[in-house]
Amino acid sequence: MTTSVLEVDHIATGYSGSPVVRDAHLSVGSGEVVVLLGANGAGKTTTLRAISGLLRLQKGAIRLNGRDLAQQSATARARSGIAHVPEGRGVIHSLTVGEHFSLRHRGGTLEPEIAYEYFPALGDLRNRRAGLLSGGEQQMLSLGRALATRPTLLCIDELSLGLAPIVVENLLPVIRNFSDSQEGAVLLVEQHVHLALEIADRGYLMANGVSRGSFSAEELRSDQGLIQASYLGDRVEDTVIQLESPLAINGKEAE
Image (tube, rainbow, N blue to C red; front, side, top):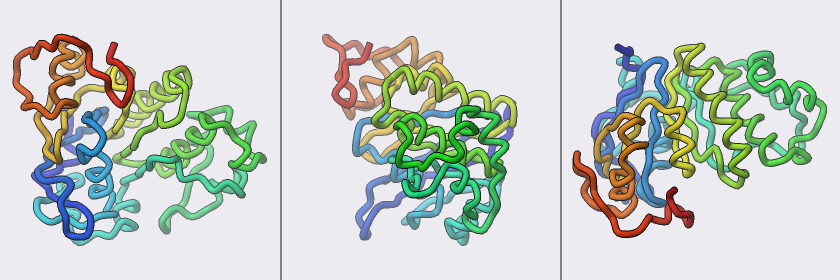
């Protein structure tokens, strides 16, 4: 039985007072990879931002290792062990790979040798400016910086954005390796559903700002109807939902 690291307890949050997430509840345990699935606009990115302290809660609670984070800023949460890899990578194009690891991370320090251990290619690129890296190399740098903080909880938003599937296939096992070797908790938002489920332990389905239940990765891999129902915005049941044709997920047909 895993120890609970993250608990998101029926939260609501959004922008300019308008809720985007209306009732999200999930948990992530030590050594566990959990994927948050749902269509564009379902509230997945907003949920990650709330966990990281970038958005205020309108209701509910978020706890890290049992501690309520309500009074903690984004910087304090980072110091507590939350690392957030945002959509769009967030690298500074004018800095070299090595210089990225010289920057202070929200008041803390980075351990570049950890990143180079997970991504040996970064060591060979340490003198190259980030703007000259390929998309896959930039994502390695972004993920490497997060891992270099020795996080307790790693939140990753759309790791595969703009990358070829073969690159994603090489990056996702690193996340699984981190979780297994460091007993780290990982919450992953990923558009390549089936690739994500290959490395995940569990998945939550989200639609219209509401999380619709937790399922094992094996259940989700074997029962495509559960995922399709979430992307259509239908109510998710514990039974197989049969559809006449495959659903195009983010513009791509589910296989």
